[in-house]
Structures are given as structure tokens and as C-alpha cells.
Image (cartoon, rainbow, N blue to C red):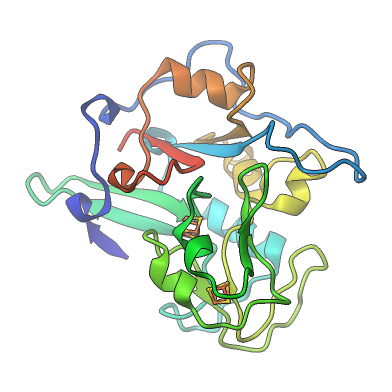
Length: 241
Ligand code: SF4
Ligand code: SF4
């Protein structure tokens, strides 16, 4: 997928440079596990920082997402489910090309939730935006409302479903931030795969924890949201765009 860079992102002046990690900061952070009987709390807000300067032209994150969540290709790229996809940005003036992984941005003010007529789209107290497949009627309003084209409609019967990632033909779905892993104190599969391959382009953690690696990194160097003009206060941030 190729987008005009200006169409996709408005960049603040401070957000232009790719920046090296501060020495001593951890790239991998375990999610803070809750016991199963503990309620999700707004004291946490889960987020992701993607450093495009470290993102190589591989598909490790996409492959890991598909394996983790039981997503198969049906040979129809235009309609196959894509919880995370690589997007190419090209600066028309200079010809400079970048690719970046794009997934649900887990907006603080999610338009997908605003338009959903059934309440199937919802945001957890900790900021993770999900779809309740039991309530979703497949109207696809949320797909139209999402400015990041982050949602997919399931056209085919689903096979090889994972118990932790229920899917259903005729419903809409998107990145869950691997909520099943986060609730078990693990990091999302895409982050784990990126780090395992040595790229270490993604940091996951609690945006409300001043001591988390992601919070420290966001405070130490410029980053940006995609389409910050929309004021959605996304949980996913980028560096180096
Ligand atoms: S990125 Fe799209 S699907 Fe995700 S919360 Fe925002 S509007 Fe909803
Ligand atoms: S497709 Fe499902 S989640 Fe999306 S707006 Fe319709 S009912 Fe809500």
C-alpha cells in the first residue's frame, strides 16, 4: 500500500529525526500482570512506540500477529484480514520512502466506538480498543470511521481459531494489542518478534507509569502520532517519521 506522506501524517517540527535510545533504557518490558480476579483499571494505559529508524523492511511483526491470532490469507490482499500491515510513505518532493507497521492505534477518543450502533466496539479502562464479536452485526460503520484503516471485515469462514482470539465470519476485527498476552503479563506478539529478530523497533508498556521504558523514551526524544490533527490521542506513537 502506498500513501502520499502528506496525506497520511502531519508531522510536528520536533518529530522529524530518528533518535538513538538513551543508554540503559530497556527495549523489552514485561506488562504489569493483574491477577485474573482483578478488574482492568484506568490507572494503566497500554501503549506502543515504533521507531521507524530501526524498522527494517521485514514482515516479522505481521507474521507473528497472524500466527498468534490465527489469521490466514485467502489470497485476496484487498480483503484479507490485516490486524497489522506495512504501509509505505513517499515524500513527493524528495522521493524519500519509508515503511512502517500500522495497526489499530488504540485511540483515547476512538471514532470506531462513537459510531458503533450496538456497543460491540468498546474501549477498556486501560485504553485497549476491542470488538465484542458476540454483539457485532457487521455493519462496518467502524471501518468507515477509523482514519487509519485499521479494521478488517471477516469475509470467509474462520478456521484454526485460537481460543484467546475468537473470530467470526460477518464481523469486524482489529489489533487487540494481544490483550490475552497483556493480561497474562506478556508483551504483544509483534513486539516480541521484532525484538527477537534484533530489530528492536517496538517498545510496549504503560504510558501512565513514569518508570516504564516507553514513558521514559517518549519523554526523552521526539515522537509523533499519525494524524495528530485529529486529536485522538493515540496509544501508538512513532519516532523517525
Ligand atoms: S485506530 Fe481505528 S479501530 Fe483503532 S481505536 Fe482508533 S478509530 Fe478505532
Ligand atoms: S461492524 Fe460491528 S463493531 Fe463495527 S460498528 Fe458495526 S456493530 Fe460495531
